Amino acid sequence: MKVPFLVKVSISDLNIRKGPGTNYDRVQFWPPGIYTVLEVKAGQGSAAGWGRLKSGIGWVSLEFCQKV
Image (tube, rainbow, N blue to C red; front, side):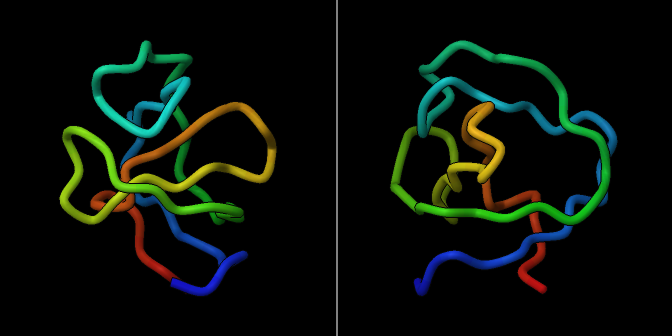
């Protein structure tokens, strides 16, 4: 997948994690909006992979994001 790219988050309680997987601690919830993903990695708990957010806060499951 070519990076960076934009994703749209539509759910109000998407977990941001410290690393690419559900085995990493949750940092916080992320509100709906458009965000930039800089890197994609495979990881536990997401068949679609994990995206590292440009803000630097952490990683989100791409299963809950729509590429725009």
